[in-house]
Length: 88
Image (spheres, helix red, strand yellow):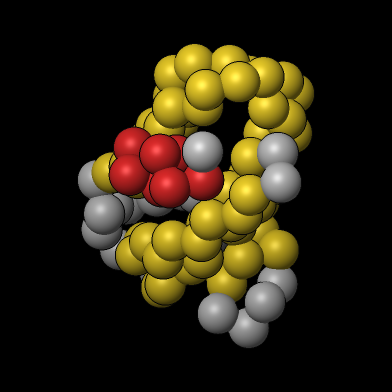
């Protein structure tokens, strides 16, 4: 399942002014948590979405952070995925 989630994972637009869309598919009921950290490791955003099955799509608003590169950490059940995004 991890590979299937990974192939469906999209974060766009990237780069952005701070507003991103995260989209992926799960194939069984999974707890979803998304966090974002800067390159030093400071947490700038975290949200628990509860249990999701199927297509997940959510806006991620990082408009209050400084310009730079951030790591989006997506925890789906026992799987973790990490993507870098650029805030302009």
